[in-house]
Length: 611
Image (cartoon, rainbow, N blue to C red; front, top):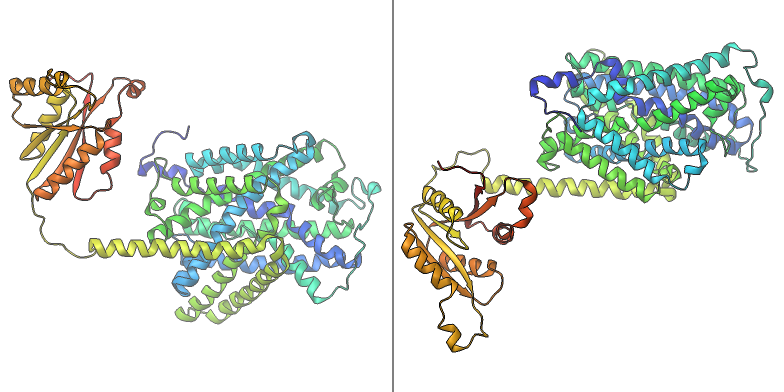
């Protein structure tokens, strides 16, 4: 389902170009035009109809901040081409502890981005088809499964699949803006009405403006993803990634300003039954086939925006794993040359989140954007330190720009926290320290491993040991013959071990009757394979405990290396494996945690021919 394994030399075809970068790493930011302006208007409406006129100037300030962030992340791409974004910048300039804050915040943001994007897309679908509303979780999980599968196949393939809906989305939004601007009263201006349902009014003061600005800044989420995913680009990676970042800034900025102009022109206000973008589309285009088609495209692309996280988080996780803050498995690529462990982990926690909130975006929005704005702030501060330390030409101007960006994003983060804390932002405040604690615990473990293994030093020469091989058997057979042959090739001494279950209910006359153990002993002497046979009598029905007890006694009496070689039949058909008693699994489980011996299997295939 995920395709054939790829050689490292073939991985280039899964790399992306600047245009494909828009569909692979920028959809989160581009689709924010569907909810960023809506969030801004929802705050301004508290101040009454007059306050809505502030949307355009606030949007212009947001676009200026977008320009600063785009410029900043283009610098990050050039300075830190290995990816990691805010984590890489913070680690290099602000120290380990601050970099872990950036990493934890980004992990929270990436997980929320997947959940919010998919839930928003399915929410738009259920708005069009209300009969699906009671069952939002299954479509969310199905969409998540499809995204996971596509990313396991490779980001390049995913980007090419997403390119068409991304292009249609961009063209559709620009068509709405252009159509709304060139028509004096738009196509459906006669249907225009303006109502503000809120009865609460508030003076348009600095607090309301700041809250509206912070809410509107949710349109900037996803801007950092390109800097995190630089290794995903074709060579030369840096100029290609910088080009995508610039394209994103130009497209997103022009869309935000164009929609803000139309919102002011058409007096769009928040509506419980229709989004701001949908209102602008309806007024501009009319409720016709074009309106329906664009609505479907927006729904699809909103869901696909979750793919931004699948491009960014696995790379971030791989960098954390290389620094020993996550399990090393996150740094290993799968057969399709992708960080499959990071993809599976992101999918798993996103699924838990979607199930936990029942696929409802309203339960996720208060937590959204806090993580990414924390990353914005730390990235900007890190660059200020970077310019001050390296002192390139015009470094003071660069530092001033980044310092201003850090101040604005920092204030926005604080306002997010204060205004959304009781609505769910407190979960992020708890989650980030817990993730950092997890990082530190993993780091401490790897430090202990490094000390114990004396990594980085040359150890003394290895010493050989005499080896005693123990072979549990049930009878004399070709399996026993094969296992003994393998045992003799492994060690100087081999012992065949047979466990006989005694029956305490037998009377004296029955005890005199030859038993299975007696028969086995006679056959062994007749066969004479050249190794000792030990017979253990036990009143346990399981053979595992008697074997473990025997090994313990042997360990106390000898210093040799002990190898337990378990004979195993490998049927010619996998389905026949269940027909065997699985004793090897039980015995292996009992011995697997012991460091004073080696557990191995002598695998005998039923179709094996004599050598």
